[in-house]
Image (cartoon, rainbow, N blue to C red; front, side, top):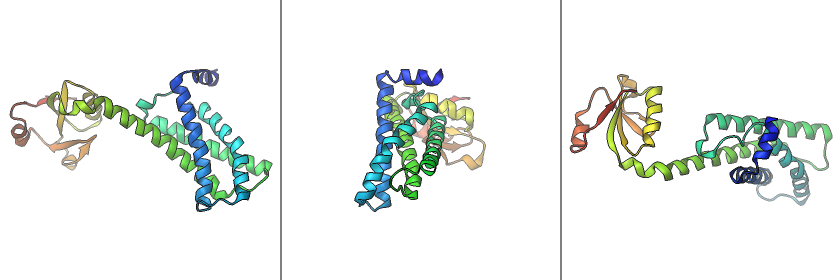
Length: 219
């Protein structure tokens, strides 16, 4: 029932756009895999094999995309679980394509290198586009906030502090200017673009922000 609900969800314009994107990426990945195999000079005989196989390979891949839930999420919130679903869907589809070719021996020859390149390109195209979209969306929504808000220092550089940092990055009220942590191995490192300044309240922060006092936030 859940799989059928995903098919029905494709009536949503955003879901339809995601579907069209993934189908286009699958077609492009199949073609580029052949092009790379033959140094962008695909022989006529292999062009026919490429097109014939594409007619069933891409629809088969799409079925796995749906069954692995690639259209449940929202690109703006793409995360590691989404990348894992893409990886499993692409890997399972690739294994199925190899099995079908081995069992049915379709007309024409498909180079083995293509069967390796195609899932790699597919993973790069589908995963990369989702994270690039998330980066662009967040930068457009929250990028203007980075120079606004009251400056704040975070105490700690652990998981709780990072989660809080993510929330404050989206806030118009606060602007994170640094993090403080007792672990000397963390000093000088950057977490989500924010530097771990050291232990305690550094004097230079006061000098840098003479008119905007920092606020310490305990995660």
